[in-house]
Length: 158
Image 1 (cartoon, rainbow, N blue to C red):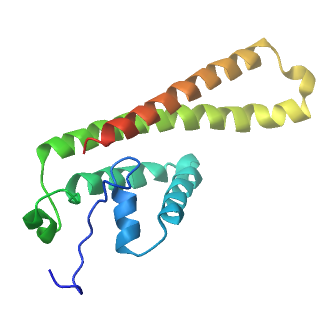
Image 2: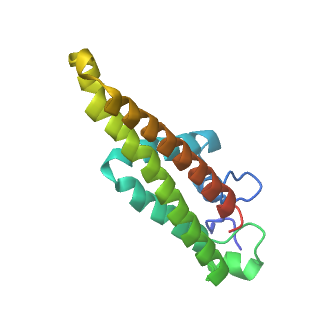
């Protein structure tokens, strides 16, 4: 392969999950910490709007078809790989991540928009149902964070 022709390769040595962001940062010659920060910020900013799901689908799809640095030279030269095992792991990771992100974002939106203003404006109208809502929301967010962590760990098998 000539030096002018480069293919996008997932970097498994510097990966946190699948190595896609580290591969993209290497391909674009961008600092890895900056690339990760931009990706996480993009997910967080788009969380209330549902666009995070499209970004997540693209991430896991890219992770399933873009070759890793330890794949054969033939696969790396071709620039893509069709591996059913990687696709299944990607789909499972995407589903678990999506459920986890929903369990984090929905209660957070519930707490911020429903109770955030009413606690400030009407402090005496906040009663037991409000406290129960907060407890359920916090438990849902904790479960969501656990699911997100599990999906990241599971996606490392891709």
